[in-house]
Image 1: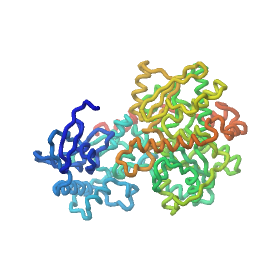
Image 2: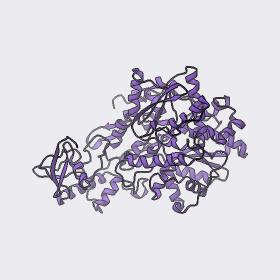
Image 3: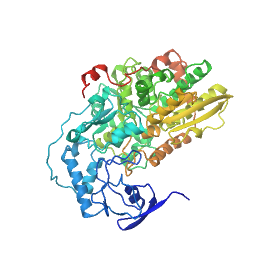
Image 4: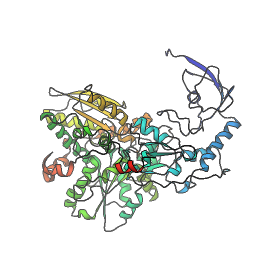
Length: 596
């Protein structure tokens, strides 16, 4: 029984009893009344910026915002009076007055919160016709597109970047009519400290922030008879893509996606889970080598490109701690244009390599200068889960009626350790499954290491590997990473191995995943739990559940790579990272914009 004080109030004639400190909006939700909103989000600080959630309260002259007004004993609240409906309609109309009228060609069409409110309030005509703001669209980043003309100043992007990710790449600039949301010094996104995670695109209610769309480029290459188009699919994509076609989150549609990709015209379809197994072999041996030979510890995973860019910007002192392993995406890209090119007889120069990822930062990763160890750009283009959904729909493919397809050999077979890469803690669990058996030469007593599972921001465990106590940690969201790194530097925490995922929940919550349908919270743990359960289910159904048991991994080392951490492995599968400007701002930009 809670010892917190309860208060009683009336909302639209209904009695409500809520904990003291609750807002009017929370009190209304508790009795089944949804108050429309644009700027509010339950996991972010309250802004009260949009004013859409206004209500009437007896005894108060003005219409207060329900998201920031504390519920009080005896309060009488009305959420649906003619005056309130008119006020909300006027507010939305005023926002629309300064908004581009291009809904039919906007990529956020039907997923736009502003559009949904306009329909909800029955707005069929715009009575206001004032001056419009005019801004150029920022296409500088390979990952994120920013269209300031569609920004409604709700501030969700500012708050998620600051409060969830701790990056602070965006902020308000100017005042009044000239107010806008921009990176520091009004620079473009590419030159800012933006880590390209794309969480802002999940929270943006309009199309002001979206992933860079490469679907037309991919369609063009698919139609080119001179190009051999190959594609790979990440683990988290297969349990989320179905949401775009009415399937429940977490539904495993791996082989239906393969079938759709073949219909789109891809000549080879590979599974990123194969290179996830390969990553574990390389990363596991790297960890063992560091522990045995007193290398730099703790070792951090390097599969999450947003985390890598964050480390380069804000914590370059930890760059030597990063695993030198490329991500599974980039390992696969290098193998497609070397190993597969050699086996298939297709020249690497004719190959066009596409990656389907839950992540916008992967677009940045494939464009890094270091990612060309095959002699060509290892991965030519990255599409998000959302982009692939659009391509399938545009091609008229009846996804719900597809028969299952099959991956191409020899880069299509994986163990159960691979799919769990897509959920926070999965990389750690997969690595420990292999590291334990490589070190001890014994069977792992318990295959499922549940100590590193879950959706707590920071989790830690100690694993006994034949008498060696290995301290590990799992962390997601970069605001949590910042806290962890600070405590490591202060000597408060001591680890051997740390898994870092940029996005909440890991790849299942990536910035390129489908917009939550019927959920107001992109960080809803129900959604993440469902997607994560889908990946764990794939793991459980696999006959082989440890990366070193994959027979095709054994074969690729025997026929091509020779040995983990060997010469060719280092050339193709490993990389290096570099310090970026601490402020993320080139000196010439700072000097040029000193008065901004």
